[in-house]
Image (cartoon, one colour):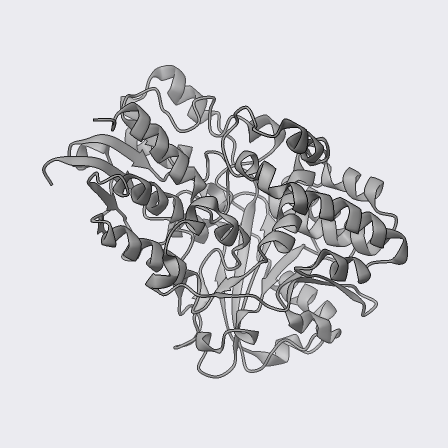
Length: 472
């Protein structure tokens, strides 16, 4: 491959985004992917029965729709179609009640307890209005903001623990629980900073962009990115593991869609001792335990409003969710885990020939070998009695399975590293996308702005490479 300007290792959303950003400038770029298909954490497969298409990792994609970079790409021309369920999210309770988060702030507020309706409207109406001014700060690296006052309004709340913010802002248990469930996507204890920021950002996404699913599964999004890259002249080589930088063709820039541990295996001999030690100190967080089901019929929710949402949070009250996440962080798998559930075939019948697919995971200690299947199924039964009777087949991915599937998920951490305050502004080190080695960059979810299918980590890493070594 003579005269290659850039090489990207890893064809996840960030690796593909980095390659596209470079190819858009007319430079040559080649992506190497060890798996037989592109996508990284954005792939789909028949995990249970023939014809039943499950998302292997990510399933619901608010950041993909909100991403400034993805919005600029003609992905619809390459087959990507978004499906928005009537409600972005449903959160059932043990008494048979349920709350939903809708695109409309007002409609969402009306489903809360009376004392919290005006509070919710005021909080999220202001955030929705501010989003165009804070978008680049939230979905980008640390830098001086263009709109510091708007960011300060967001940041004063965002840097708090979610549990504290929920109790301070809301009077009723419904709003507190809904916010706590959204904040639990952080994979941190809810008494930890900045879990409120994760909750606010994801809730805001529901009102700004929705929580959509790609028709046909997550693989369609990855395939659309790959097709666009090829249309720009980029090349993708799949089924080709890269074990050393010496395996790669000569290039002015090498961008690695890798978290610190696999990056050290690939390039540790090229890094300075100080930077190597910094990567070795990088902390991974708790893990995911994932279960996919093929069902003969839809989940029999006790409250039928849950069938309006592609995403359902199963955890009960704020106190229950906080306890479950604290247990998992502390090394104790929760008896009643907080379960994130997606039910795409209620809105996309192309995903199963007959019946339905369901996607779930809960948080467990990193590297845990505990069998969480009975506990996850019991949580679903708690809000949907008779669920087990609908099951045709199951597929389980334990933390070790997730790491084998994607080496970036060290110990099963699908977030590619703990997103607590200590690492928030230095992911993975103070060099962010740089490594101290000229022409070698990191572009994975271990860099700002972090986990999420948005491609912004790859985009900003590519911009840095273009500024530093690809200017000629």
